[in-house]
Image (spheres, helix red, strand yellow):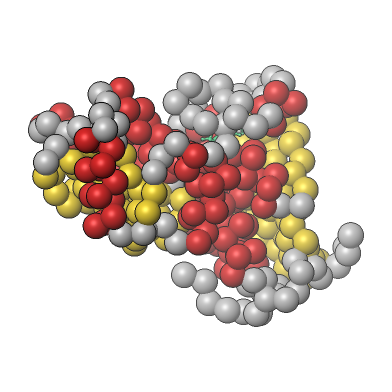
Length: 151
Length: 119
Ligand SMILES: Nc1ncnc2c1ncn2[C@@H]1O[C@H](COP(=O)(O)OP(=O)(O)OP(=O)(O)O)[C@@H](O)[C@H]1O
Ligand SMILES: [Mg+2]
């Protein structure tokens, strides 16, 4: 992987539902500094949304006063999104990554399915009671248009 | 934003404008529950024509309403998904059991046909 950092943003925000859209739009806006296609942008938005929602819903059990940290880094032809919470952590990461697994009967267990389908790499680092860091990496093909406005 | 467009022939027409994520899924659930508690609702049409984004929280809330409709032998139909939304809904598997089409008119036809057959 190319290691030259082209740009990086670090964002810390309250674990409030409003900040899920804020974070995915921010990441998408930064991603347009690489040559992303519209469909790659959509994929990046969904994956970011899933990681941030999980941090708020599961990590922090919807406590809005807790802080989610997001680091988005652009490399020459890679995008990396790291989402970190200091919440409850995941006891069994392998089980959590299984499609359709959810610890909440109301949910479908789709978050990791989307992250894994839409990104090239998904790394989960978690410790019970210490928190979870999810790192998403996507290779940017370079066939898209640079600096296109994101809505 | 979720709007209740109408409630006609026991069928609630729900329109989603913009994004359906963790924040707006909550609003969707509340708006639809309120409409369902105040009137007789058997079937549901969800208009996604003006929806621009959906994630697992949005899919979860649609599935939750589907289960309620199904439990009372009603019919749910989705229409108006753009390419991105359709792809995500397909991946989730819900399109294998929730009927979908491309206009409100067709949605009413599907409901008429299925309701006639007893769903
Ligand atoms: N940040 C996190 N902190 C603690 N647990 C997590 C975290 N992220 C995921 N999990 C655990 O992993 C499980 C699977 O996550 P995933 O996003 O795939 O499904 P979900 O969030 O349960 O459902 P959906 O994403 O469809 O709403 C969750 O149910 C939860 O138990
Ligand atoms: Mg999730």
